[in-house]
Length: 569
Image (cartoon, rainbow, N blue to C red; front, side, top):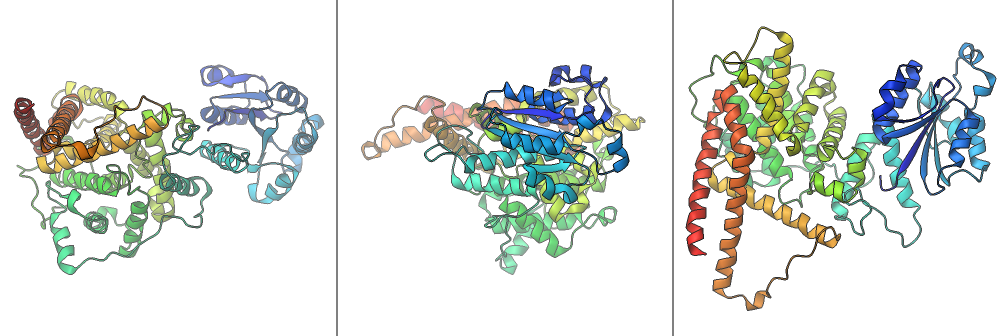
């Protein structure tokens, strides 16, 4: 959040009042009541630090020492609705309702003190405690997502009451003097409504639009969804939506997933909602990229024969499934869930990196403690979309697989996954073992790695397609660089010559310079990340050899092009 929030927890069950951080939490929890230990763990996971109190007097004394400008969230355990339980509580511990009244009238307390009532029955007790001054009423067995939801609501409400002329921070750019743009902010805001408040605000962009495609065009799209040379860069959003529909429809033909599938209308609705949750103004992280990743995942699963053969496209040349392939560990449900993870892996992407969000003190970064910020946001937003539009996919095993797969797309974790793959290879030729626990671990690693590969598969596509994606990513980085300059996060770039003075020669040299930069960036990414990853993957899943071969061809072509251009310059 833009401001620092101080968290306090008041519960008569607290045995060892203290200021707690994650580092000392475990040493204290063994002495605490089970409910207190659980709640403090949830609070510290969100706020990083919290103070615990067992009495109203101690809590008020502590609050009086806090800087008046600090925003304080006070979680108050309220009296139980069960008379038998109330009789067991010391009379001086029934502090909740009277404390709410005192907060209203005590001038020495912080001006922005936000009490939250912890109760047995949220619905039944909501009105009473809100009237007494609580900003929210939640179940006394606290859960981290609910706490984060309160934090989000506080941020939004705080922005509404800022004095005239004070900057209203955005979700993406934090407390800087400008935000990334109203469209991106509205999309993030809308997704937060879905994530935390289970409601659709007026003007919600998550709307469904009808597809306008001719019969011949639809037939063409149906014929290309299995091709590795899938031309996502040449398709409209409507056409990409239809491709996604065909991919899921094919996966629905498996008998093993019939209990999980949607009707044709509901599937079209779901894909349209997901499409609307992507920012069309992003040059790279948009719906086109997501369908490209979905199609790459589809191609992998076809090659691995986890999905039924798709006869309307020309798949990569294969010699059949390898007896020692780790692909044997996957089943049809895994295949469907991987397709889901692919289409939802970048939901709400704002077109900037995790490093940008952290450096700009973005509320998104603070919400997720500066760790895998975007990936955590994508997971949370997409799982709530699933809860509303494909609820059967909220089973724990399915949800865990989706979260693992999406989190794997954080490139900061790249070498962790490489080490995990290497550990499998070091075990020798036996990839599918007799150990069920080890097989389950390997399955989750394979699923995460497949989505990771699909996410960066643009460098494994045919060179002209790969070049398009390289240019799109360069444009997005340039937009972010321009934003960093506007925010004062870096020094302005040197002024470019006026376009009116540019000659054909200078235009040609500029084009050459840009092509050289693209070639160098592609070679760097292939050498440092994509090449080693796809080589390691084809060792455990030989059916995906075609991707590593294409990367090798592209690398050779970029090196050749770079050598030719160096002669020109």
